[in-house]
Length: 267
Image (tube, rainbow, N blue to C red; front, top):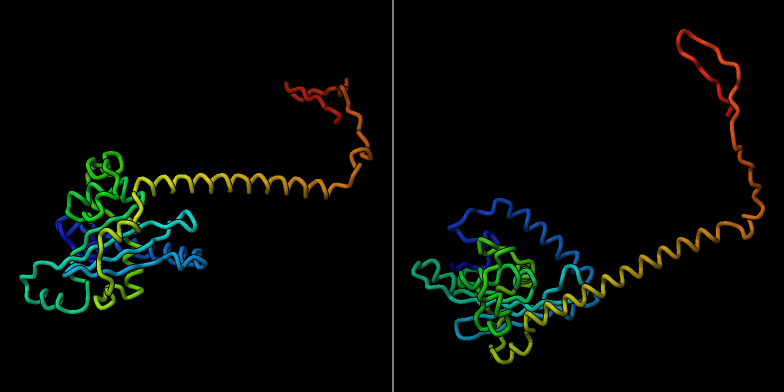
């Protein structure tokens, strides 16, 4: 199964499968998420780098995509654009231009969703960027994700969808911007092994959990200290204790009303 980036966004399962009816919902959802991330990462925008390479008729995009849940943490995403076999004169005319919209795509990402859920499906459907097979988990390549993706279908990957949105915003579908010569060896050194990236992500998540726990504990202590300051010192000694009544006497006078007997208690 081969498709363009636009076609992947329209329906990642391909034209032969059921159409994604809620694609507009996904577009709005991911756009909103990306906007929120961009605001959060305003101080680290220099780390959201992108590199554009040309290799004959191939074009390769390398992007650092921020995690939605872990601040200042980035995934490696690569997109390979290859020229389709254009039997249709109209398609051939399009690919002769300066736009990559009609080029086929393959992907690599060390985003956990891609690694654990979709890698095997992308490999099976010839949508995995093979130049970086050595950077992917060997198990993810060989084994289907039976639990998370039992039907082994290609689906939306957040980091890839973010890449598409950023490329549209930055005009990175323009071939004229691809000026660097592609070197697989050089780019390999930039890309982190998926297994290592996953481990780093787990550690970062644990650190955030510990930090949140400490902050909650500190907030609890602050509230406690605030309450203590509001109560004057020694106030407990000045409070008169009211004697408790051990027993309550019931009146000996009871009156009968029909067959029901009411007993009046003094409280």
